[in-house]
Image (tube, rainbow, N blue to C red):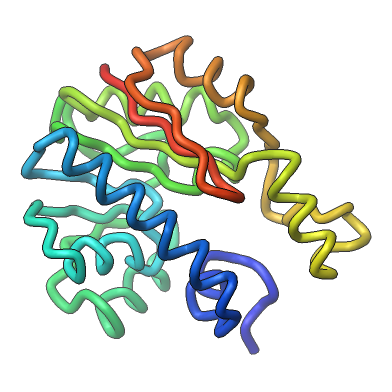
Length: 197
């Protein structure tokens, strides 16, 4: 049975409003990747590959590599969306790539899940030669939306997998402490930062 939270549930949920929000989020990601004009991308924390599949659907021509801590997520991606996925099992705290391996490193909806977001960001920047593209839930709006639709009520709407909650200022401070923020966008209930190494 599918859990009521997590990346797979989020993308496979049939709720039309949720699908609209996710599609709008994906369009923002594609627009920012196009802005960088890179041709090679690492998606660290790619999960089941939904964003990389959206790249394909939108005609974005970039070579992609996916990395995720969960082998089962990479298997699901290959079996259901991306049969040619170049994927590797990797911990965001210790990515198995040399310095400056990718012109763009993405990590979408990941930093709020890991114990040390600052260390994770430092590792993303290490393997990036130019840009990082990051997103986290925009708090308190993400929790509020969950609560209003009856999700995670005992946790006041906070996803049980989220170790950190970032409002706009806190997220920008986290990223700007290590990189130069180029764009900070909000697409309810998420926020996205494109930064330069």
